[in-house]
Image (cartoon, helix red, strand yellow):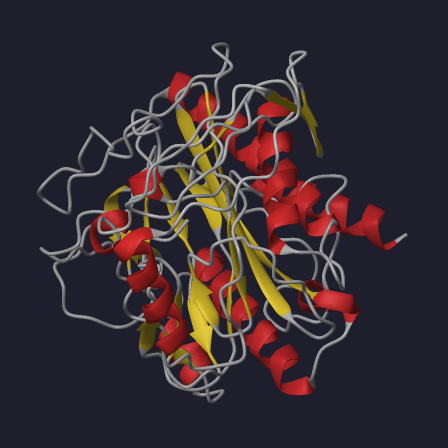
Length: 424
């Protein structure tokens, strides 16, 4: 999941770490969004309630339980009452609705209706410190060059969290199809995370109402899953983060709805993937790669350090800048997640205080891995696995054909084996 500013300055051989004083966390620009907790149940770990939009109350229906994908109402031998009219949204709710309807959206994507927010109540699942009250308690170091070095035990936990995030992302990706809603994808992400003993990290992070981000077409990042149906030719980014045994694994990938899209979107996807791999593999600068191909890189959001804290030092910028730099060292973990646009990289923020789109309504693409620096090179902790699909941009890349799992000898060997077996 993205952090605010987004650009990666990577120098040849080293990754340059930069921070801006006003950027402390992905959530810095999102603290205005607050959603009341509502209870839902995916598998057997959550309980369903009605939910609310920011600022309204939450009404809990204790007569409902659910299993994955279904909800069963228990009437408890009471007479069925007549359907009551929906309660008034109140002045605040009406104002929000008016603002949403009057908003000048840049492209064709519009916000849909959201299903009830979930919380995870399974006591066996470790939850991040913001799960109940929306507020992370651990803050990044004030000095941007102070980066946490993970020890051996912590690295193993990061590997486990990264593996779970990859598995969940692959499950969500398999569901992408014409007519499927992004809310249905979110339900899958929630259920698959719970099934693996993990908490879906975005859920209630500074009030974010869902378990993943689904960003369609011109949506740069932080798209909120809703009842909008995916259409043939759409491109969608699924951003998945899972919190397992005290550590986060964060990754995202693009998917083409219906398997085909227009040529310019294909070119955008290829350029975004190639600049991302170049940055991770040889320390190239993302901005240089995309600008010469006619694209732009978003500067409002950035990659970030990650571990027991969702977003921490370092900030990873995906463009050239003059901020004070640090150098990566073994034991550092962070994300690289460039957001590349067909047109302007200027951002339009929706009234929900989360969704960010391009100002001109043109399309955008993004990829993300959680990476580990080792003495031998870079390892993708959220790298693809045996069951992961190979997309056209991996097959046709001029930078790195096949799967990219890192620069260590072990990672390169594993990537070659998986690519070979996947192409058979």
